[in-house]
Image 1: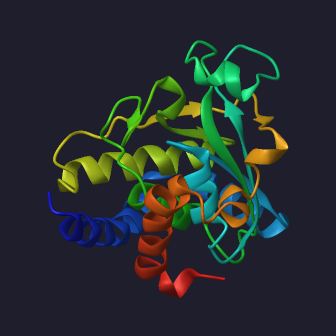
Image 2: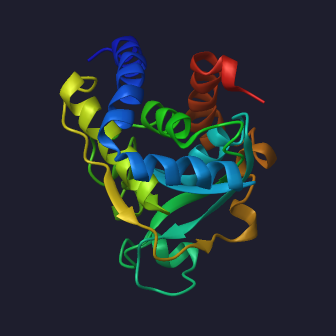
Length: 216
């Protein structure tokens, strides 16, 4: 499907998704979700969508996002190094852990940005980056996040927003290890590097265009 059609379809699904979430989440759970948001100053989301440099650069632009930390999740190796994760043998995915203010940006809006800024239909690959460490994955932190992610994924698949089925895994967060210091704020500090110019910058430019009303 053409990229513009994907964007338009996802935006339509967002509206339906809002209603679907309200209808499918049980009343008691909705109350708990509302109370949780109102009583929280910040919340946390963890997404894997290919190279964490790209994910970090995108979400740092979003209003309501307080901090983005690149790191590793989902594997068995404790405190892995970048070199170890790059072997694809640790089980970890490159992820970004996002600290956000739920009064300024919702988890639903973060999911919307997540779906639109990578290809969720490719297994263990984003562009030329290949390996299990580049898999598409949502590591949920609570039942609310799990339900919203599952509902959104199902609605996108039914809508035909993508030509192929979405392969994004939805898993509970079991660990998170911050990446080495030189990976943090990578695009801001290395914007002129070839990878930044040819891979990260187009993603950031697209995000700024599509989500212009949600930028800081």
